[in-house]
Image (cartoon, rainbow, N blue to C red):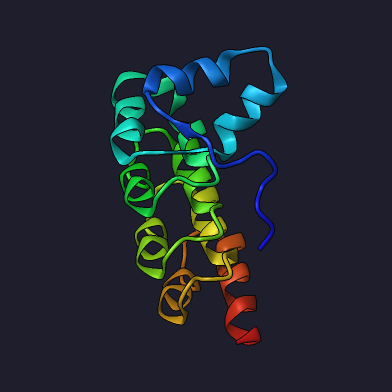
Length: 141
């Protein structure tokens, strides 16, 4: 896998992450999306800057432990961003498959890592689009 150009710097605090996100410098803005941070920094952003949670979920290096926290966030936009992550585990996709937001369930039905068991559940979803997407995935496997 190709390493992201310039990635590798660590974000050292929640305040630094917010500064990178809010700045006008494109390189700093990009760092907010690709640079890693400690679990504690991510938790500080989540707890102290709730408006930035969707951007935490969007970060390419955010650890699974943080995605698990964000998968149950009160904001559907944050949960949707989590559902779109390629690296999700089947247990996290299973949790998201019961989300009240149909777009999140649809993202799970379309996700390449969703297990057959979860797809079977989604095949009986109340929303037709989710049922169809899950059915297509079941027939492909």
